[in-house]
Length: 60
Image (cartoon, rainbow, N blue to C red; front, top):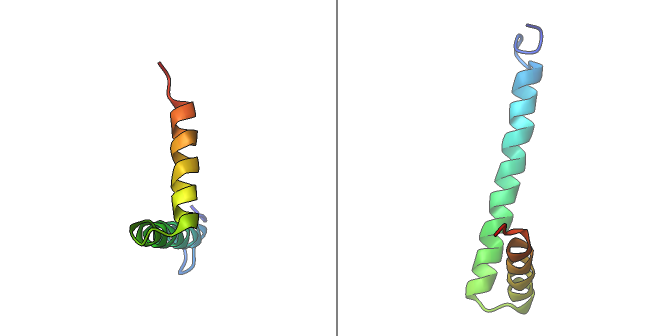
């Protein structure tokens, strides 16, 4: 119960860290998407690399 009790419980702290991490992830994703639309080479390279990783993970 100590994990969920108190003003700054461990649960609240964990939630806040998790939320901040996801916000950072979605900001990065949005920036890459904008860069792709702008045709920036670094973003196109990331897209190509990511597509290769996903393709290599497919199970037939």
